[in-house]
Length: 489
Ligand code: DUC
Ligand code: ZN
Ligand code: ZN
Image: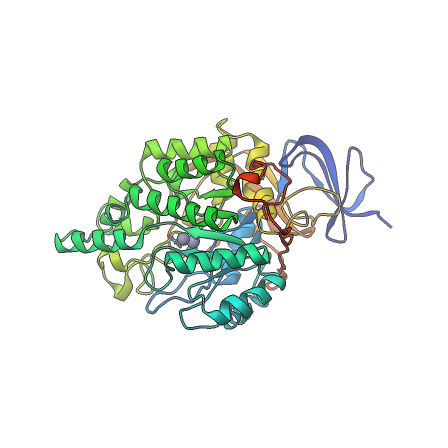
């Protein structure tokens, strides 16, 4: 009888804190030992010359999220989590979205029905709060937070999703009372609406004008406002999908004042620019997302923010819409004005390889920072740590074995989502996930998805209840760092 079900032997094991050479012993789906020369396991994987990291935690991705017709997301839980697994991600946190007028409980029940029996890797849910009624604030959200749904996204733009400042204050106050993490989509809705009308009146409706309708100032203003609202309520906040230097400077400024403001960025802000929106014909529609990609100078600023600790989280913001499809980027089957192009691009499978190759491989990021940004920090911030996001005895055996030398040219045919394009077509990377394990089970090997449909489990998130009374804003000890073990809440 073997002590271990599996031993991963001789790899370079990387966590957010250390990079060491050791074996990883797995028993019952969990990590049971980390040491040199472990006894033989029932199964063995030779990881010499390979890097072993925790499975990625993609804390911002959309899949099978109900959309206003004719739009429809191309990925359901099956295709999105299959694609995640093949890109080294073993935990996803998509969004159960409340529609205005709907109970959030009903949205969560519906989203469970969509996920049940369909996931290849484990999943938790964020909530999207679009209608913070008395019932939602007093009954539904407190109950949901206590039941394992401890984070929610609020929008400052999109007519069917946005909250006004007073509603945001109500929701942030609730987050403070109940110990939840608020994520904010920070763009100024009125500025976008006004600019969009001006552009349309001038006949500027091609995809490239999407970027002109959402310039940097629109994101910077909303980011500053979101930070101010969170300071007023004295509650942590996380600004999602930061696109460039101006919004980032607001976050850095808040952090330097000791405010608990966290930042997330995504691959599109490192690898795309607004020029991609101006690609020939209607091709630019493929890269329409919000906030839009900026320019090369802003890409460099985002790299700097990742390396210097302004950002804690690197997510995909996978928002899958098919290009040549009337339910996707060409609603009604036509080249419609940019206002009607669904916002979002696919990226759940390419998130980790892009950052590994261009960040770690090109010396822009330490390996431990890569792990912190893509797995450990999101697991901590959203209440899944230490079960997820690290390699430690007792943690789930969610692991990625990387071949750091493997050269890969990204093509859509290599990927496992149900989208008909990737914005990164033709990019040449060095380093790729060779094997992905979820709770000790291989879910992808050599680019082939493995594991049975429905093996992914729902995860309840747990954040510590805030201590009361809490010190005022200036009473907080500053401890925002990518590898901090302190819980943010
Ligand atoms: N913007 C969002 O706010 N959500 C999905 C994708 C996008 O581009
Ligand atoms: Zn958003
Ligand atoms: Zn999103």
